[in-house]
Each structure stands twice: as structure tokens, then as C-alpha cells.
Image (cartoon, rainbow, N blue to C red):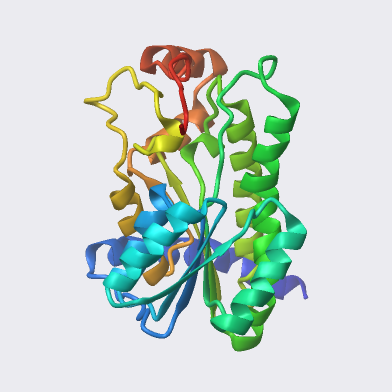
Length: 302
């Protein structure tokens, strides 16, 4: 037993080096992309913003069926018609992912009308955009219910069947604010940090589940209506991401079975700096970049 443990201890660093080298080689070689032609994709918050672009991108890449969930029927109808014009079967359901009973009820309706979901994209999110003391209690609860708990309910609704089929993918559209919070969006940052922990735990839990995987996307500020009014101090150095770019990279990450994706790549530097710099230095970076005051002009979705 002692020799077995010693052997495992000596082998471990070799395995780490091998995996790092393998990952580096994969970055240089053209990736092998997963075929989506047999996949039924459900996108929460699919009527507008990044969700609409995700639906387009999955359809463009040959997904079999697209299912949209959201709370605003007008937006869902428009996106559904657009996807159908692209030649892809598309359906929509009115569903508030923050409502557990509604999620389970509509999940059953989806299975009966459309079939099994093999790719679930948890994209729905809201932001209150105020400091803690200025926030309304109900608005704070709404953020947690939709941004965090909604993923619990949707995943519990669809994951069991994916495990039975040994075919499935859980996708989370998170935010870099899960790793580096800012003032003025305490509800959003907290909910996204919880969501990130949820996905990290889920991803590890699926390691022994053949055919079922997970992808977490953490993009920088994206130019959508949800964060309308947010201002970056140096937009030429840190331009907001385009929603179509986030959608394209997300679908590619799913096709490559990539567990975590930071957008843009410079966000990796932020993660490294947070782990090595003292708090005083991090505070100066926030002041210099303008993240301390970027939510002062926030208006949000109208």
C-alpha cells in the first residue's frame, strides 16, 4: 500500500506536465468540432440579447431543434420566426426560470411537444444595478432567483434524462464579474459568483458521467440592453464584447467540449493578478480602470 501511494505521488507531476503540454498542442492544432445535427438546444432568455444570438448561432451550425424560454412573448415570437426562416425547427415557451414550479411544468411540456433536450443553455439573467443600501429587497431576491436558483431548477429538470441517454451538455452564460466584482451591481456579482460555484461543482460531478459535459462562459462587459449605460473608462483598450462574438465563441466551446471560457483572453491576466497582488494594489487597478464608477451611469434595459 505504501509503495502504491508513493508511485501515485511520483506519477502525479508527470500527469500534470502531460496534460499541460497536451492542452498547449491542442491550442495550435485545428479543433475537432462536435456535430450538432442531432441536438435539441434549449436557450433560457432566448428572446433577446445574447440569448437571441445564441439561438442564431446554434441554428447556423446545424442544430436539429431550437427551443426558447423567456418571459416576454413578443421577443420570443420574433426570434422564433427568425430561426424558422433560417430553416431550423424552433419553438418557444413562456417561462420564468426563477419560478421552480413553472420550470418543471414547462420542462414536461417541452419533452412532450418537442422531445428530449440534449443541450441546455442557462443564459437568462437580470441586473438591478444599485448599491446594497439603495437596492429594493424584492429586486435583490429576483436577481438571486433568476441568475442562480434558476440554474438549479433547469438543470434538475433536464439533466436526469441526459444522464440516461449518455448525451447532454449544460452551458452557463456567466460573467467575469463572478471573479472580480464591482460596486453598483452587488446583486448581479453575488448571483454570478454563486452560479460559477454551481457550475464548477457540477462540472467536477460530471467527470464520471459518460457523454454528459458542461461549459461555463465568463465574458467581459457585453454591449447589450441589459447593461445599457455602463461606461468603461478606456473603451479603446477594453472595448465591450459584441453579443454575436460571445455567442459564436460559446457554441465553439460547446463543440470543443471546453469546460471554462474567459472572454476575451486578457481576462486570464485579471485572474492571475487577483491571486498574487495585495488588496491595495487591486483597489488601485479598479480606480485606474474606472470599474469603481462604471455603474454610476447605468440605466439598464428599458
